[in-house]
Length: 391
Image 1 (cartoon, rainbow, N blue to C red):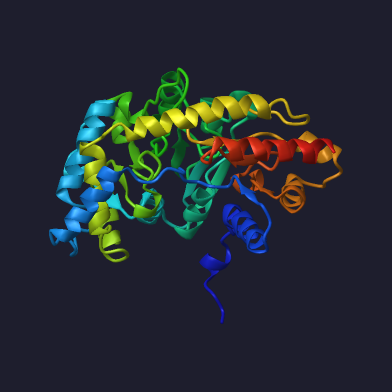
Image 2: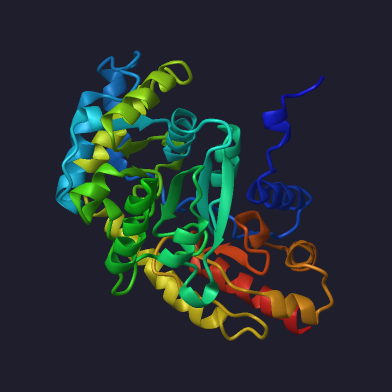
């Protein structure tokens, strides 16, 4: 069977590939430590589970509006007001089946054939693939390690062409955990306003921030930038609800309407019970989010100090999310590997530690380690990595 060109052009997910290999080894009886997880290792808080269960018992098991329940939109609007002092109407908010599908729908509604989207590297693996599926062209701008993997206004300005439609800002970032501060966002925003390009601000990790870092949305800076920005968020990471598939976007009402119309022909609506769980997540907070955040911060501080002691490994300390993104090029090269990808494969085969190669994120000298697992497993994994490098 001949498949469509759009699907044939997709790049397979490096995260899923390494996960599949790790599962295969586990089935063979090997003691594999997997550090590829892109989700919290905490269960969804019980008050959210109970709210979803109650909604089903009460008969809320039917179709909902394609763009989300009014009560959930209200909860999201309140969240924006309380957290960022941003005002959004229901017509400016769409709820979808996860932030990933929200982004997919956004690019489908926004892009025509040949439109360009500027994507800073390292990037989340699905950004370029979703742009390509919408007929767009990814334009990569290197976020240099010496600048905490962030792009500069000058880099953005130089990358803009007459085909540029949007730029993606992911802060805190997957895979690096880096964050843009208010001044950096303002400067990037000035370039976007100058060229009249849309800012897609992915803020899915905003609640998982450490040390003295503070999350700031580019939409907060001015009314002009708010009008030029689509904020993408969800409850997957903040409330450990990855499997519930609830994400949302807030922005221009015409764009949101177009996204809603498209969703009505693809998913019909987000799952009803998941929406009621998300309402509870934002209206009945019981401290679970902070408990999880504190645990991640404790793991980060303990694991990071050990990681940077390993020969041939350097790492920028992240400010958010739950990933480390160390540079292992020296370690791989000194061991005779042609690439970090080959090094990652050998690490899994020899020491049974699964990490994600940075090539899938546009950064081939790095690897991504998730610390969304127990401290004992993290420390054991680092011991194995150090043994693999030094033996």
